[in-house]
Length: 462
Image (cartoon, rainbow, N blue to C red; front, side, top):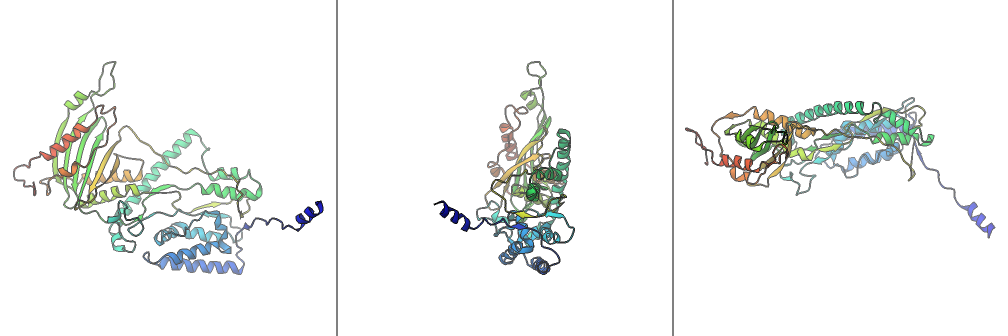
């Protein structure tokens, strides 16, 4: 029996060694052929219109990445999904996808030891790519409708510039926090190198590369979208602005004519001074000092439409872990090679995150857009007067710009009082408004309903 068992063991095939993936040497025919394929694919992708069938070129990119000189790319977990849209692929390619693919050929050159981390694919929110019941579906451009997309390009450029400024402010804030809490202890390439050196030599590069991959220049960005210019309907803003000095407001703007209605009740917080209630709000005195007013006139239609566009897209912002390609030198002594990882392989990842901040001067406004022809209203909330969220922060800037264009005068449209019954204000901090603001807000709507035009002012439809 022992001899039989020994014979079986001797005849069994040895376990195959795990395949090791390494750069393709430059001085080989396969490197030259791979380079030619990449150049041809790059030219094809650049010329292909976004409305074309993207499946063949997506398949070509995936096939290229699986070929010998690019197979080291498996260190990234499917950077080009099989079902990715052509629009997303072209955007990714231009933001650094091509640089990442080409880096595997660069690694085949003598002395090159710099890896590239690819950018993250962005979401596509277009009429062709969303479900029919998507909240914005009726107002989205088709992917191939370049004229529709182009209409809002200046707004997109301004939004991206504002987002970049927000990221810079956030980065400075985060750096100051890290410096104060734990100088030198946060994530860095050196952190990944230190963690990887604890592994055996064969696993140092994979551990280092995985650690780097979990870090990036994370940001919230607009999706790849084409939202038509919202040129009709009403935009309503409701809520409290201000803290110690404040106004409870209802504002209604007509996108077609620029008609503006503003109903306000303004006051300052009156605080108790006796020992038992010191610092608490005296509601009666605060309300007794209120000054109410209704103003009518016009605002810039272009500014109003841009604000509405931004508010509609604010819930569609895409969290992108890595906005662009990142280059990083490989640490000395790390062999650039990748092998299939065992199930129990562990590594330490970097932390990608942002900063969420606030202050006592912030309030929350509710916005509602009523499309024309009694379409389903869309609504959301906006942190005022500044926010850590880039969409809210940019929308705040657009609100300020819009209100600077206000000119008092005879309105071209009556206040949409019937629509206002379908809106509601956001709550106010209970310390500032112990009894809430519902009654005040209801009174603001009533004031609009009871408004009488001055002499010589005839409001159509009123």
